[in-house]
Amino acid sequence: MRHDDRVPHEPTPDLLPAPDAIAPRALLTVTGADRPGVTARLFAALAPRGDGRPPVEVLDVEQVVVHGHLVLGVVVGALVTGGRPVTGEAELLDHLRSVADDVEGAVGVRVAVESASGPDAPAAGGRPHHVIVLGRPVPPEAVAGAAQAVTGVGGNIDAIRRLSDVPVTSFELTVSGAEATALRAALASVAAETGADIAVEQVGIARRSKRLIVLDVDSTLVRGEVIDELAARAGRAAEVARLTAAAMNGELDFAESLRARVAVLAGLPETVLDEVREHLVLTPGARTLIRTLQRLGFRCGIVSGGFTQITGPLAESLGLDFAAANTLEVRDGRLTGGLVGEIVDRPGKARALVRFAEQYGIPLDQTVAVGDGANDLDMLSTAGLGIAFNAKPFVREQAHTALNQPHLDAVLQVLGFTRDEVLDAV
Image (cartoon, rainbow, N blue to C red; front, side):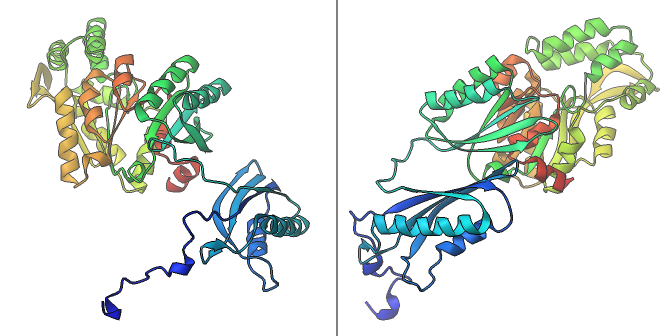
């Protein structure tokens, strides 16, 4: 083989450790009041100074500050050359104790040193997951239950961080070693017992690569059901409310129930649509959710079993990218009790999601759908992430995850965004 045919950066044999060589390692744990310069001082003290101190390499670092209190963990190991570590464990620990004394005297923190030598722990099975615990407040028993559930399915909690403190409190647990189905089932039981929301998302870039969100309107983006408000103006509120509830619970075919509900509106003046639209109340957190995702580059829109006469102006006022809904037939300024065009029912909502994703060139696994009723189920399962929001029990069971908080912007925490990131975006 010619010299210039060699693989670039081919490792030099004497720099590779022997198969059975295990370099000594140690853990430094820094605790104390957080202040500027602590981390810099520690790593400066670890750096070679030309004074004969043994060289080390940094193998792992994790740092967290909780209410002004610093906890910094650093695993260091001796360098390996010629297949052997250049430093023994006793010499490494002595060196790190002198580093600890240096840092403690300079910045007033405590630095503990302990051996971390020995074989690595066997890699846990299953892909890592994020477990998000949300509530207002989050009861201690919810965190305890989640931790016990993780252990019960063979998992381990590798890290915990707070995502938000308002409008809901949320914590993210990074879990390794647990099989996804078993983990979700165990945590669903904890959520039911404690009243907290617990979502599970696989760790990876897919979680933060979502680029399109579709929201249901009635009882999701806005409070209440528009059809019920219109029926009240026709004096048929109770009758239509029963039909709406049956449809959302999956007890009636949506298209059939929609035609029956719309029929009772026959004869109402078209102006009632303006009245109902003016009295719409957005779900708390709706604007924050949409504005944040828009700033982050999301395409945002609505797909509704309601009516274009309501959703069109709503989408325009919120600056949404797309909207799909049914259209009430109007003649001579009055509702006829009929519909115009294709009905946006349960499969129609899923088709609309696919259509909008294709329009913007976004893969379905990078889409999010949020809804509450049976007619949202196909849309929720088609999306890369389907979130049941204050939904009927059987909808929650079939969605990828569920939220029972009154704040729609809690969706941001399921997507992995912290409160600080939200504030920066809006």
